[in-house]
Image 1 (cartoon, rainbow over the protein chains, first blue to last red):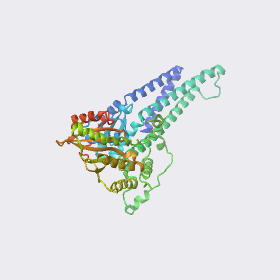
Image 2: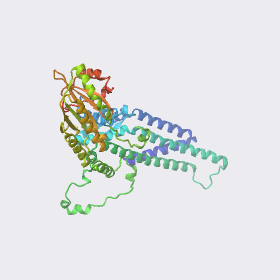
Image 3: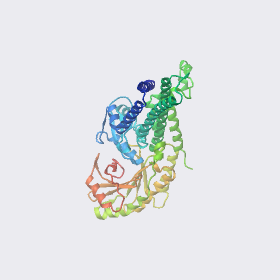
Image 4: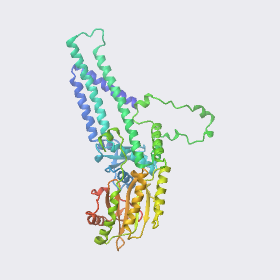
Length: 292
Length: 190
């Protein structure tokens, strides 16, 4: 999924760079950049409606979902934040999300799948995580960050044309060097790749920040941890079975998990379950330290 | 939340505002004279019990502290459906200031143990001669009060609540947003 998205984006960059080269004007790149940033801002401004429509979610009133509203009411009172609207999406996929251009216009949405899968405490942990996204204004932060990426791309294109024309004035021969179109293309792609990785890095950081704030809000890091394990299907990652029951064949398969930077850890939007559980365990240790 | 906290994503848990609770005894007198509502002698603090030994110890300290004095009130704890803990204190109905001191002791003990952000609200129920009950709820994070008068499951007496608000608006900081008047179904003492 990530690879497909990355390649599609790269294709778009190539296309824009190609069009820019074909017309020999930096104006095209600028136009596309303005369009891209405009689209990002539009998405941000309407993020509540867009996301709700994309997930086929509908808003629910306190009468329709008293428990859900009760939990959110209390969490908002604990955190002293305005209560967002509440939505439910009718899909078996366990998921929850929060969007909206500001905490006042936010919407928190859960799927029926997650409602059926989690216990009340775990659901509360997930909702606290989503409310922390709202409080941290993560939609705005990610919009600004991706706009910065687009602007950086536009600047490189502009700079290349500057160098192209400037070079033309000084020394118009491009002898022995790479063809200019290739330089433009490669630099555009490199800028795109770097901003892609940085955006994902930022996204993972914000997820961890929301985990932390959510855990401190409910004071139950363990509930969020077990919810994450259920949702990611990672309940099997820390085995429940007794070591002695593990059959000889599967004992051969136990390999140390390869830690370190892989392509997957660099490009995923969410931190690994291991990382998130580690942070929650640290918070748990801090909360349960007896006061002297 | 400040700009820097938003950018870094490091929000701090909101601390509780404990001071306004001492405005309750005079408000209780006003309610009694103006609306015929008398305190029932109950009072409770609603908070989020954190996992682990630290909070367990702090909660034990609170109960011990309350029971340790000569005219000790009745103390009991219960857990509601939302996973919040209610620590209930009962004193003779005419001793509202003693009740507030007890509730304040709960708050300060929890806060000094570092669990100030865990405090949700405090509830002091009142009753009139016909048996109607209304609770005065104090939201720790906002530092405001609001009335809550349940009449049945998922039903509240809004007229009585508004009457209480108007009676007390000169004395107590009342929560201005009606949407912030959180319902507390099944709260102890109501």
